[in-house]
Image (cartoon, rainbow, N blue to C red; front, side):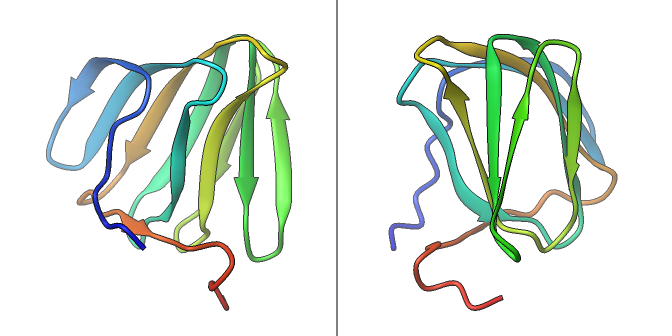
Amino acid sequence: MNDTYIRAGRINWIARGNDVGVQERTLAPGEEIPWHYHTVITDTTYCLEGIVQIEMLGPRERVLLAVGESHAVPTNRPHRITSRGGRPCRFVLVQGVGKYDRHPVDPEAWKG
């Protein structure tokens, strides 16, 4: 699996500190934040526009966020984020509290 992380979509940093990051993200159809997990921080996603799709492993689960809805992915749970419904999605992503770490995952090989 390729370890290179490409920051997909349009990113607007709102706040960036040693133990928390807040960004506004926009993903076009077909763009994704690829499969990964964090051992220290939680990813909390707040939908601003469109439909945000969060897929998770351990167990497999899909959450669809409409405008105004949010979801927190806990530590050590592999996940990816995409837009749903053929339109872009825009969301606020809060990452923290703790030192940022990111571990790529191949969902077909993950044994969790």
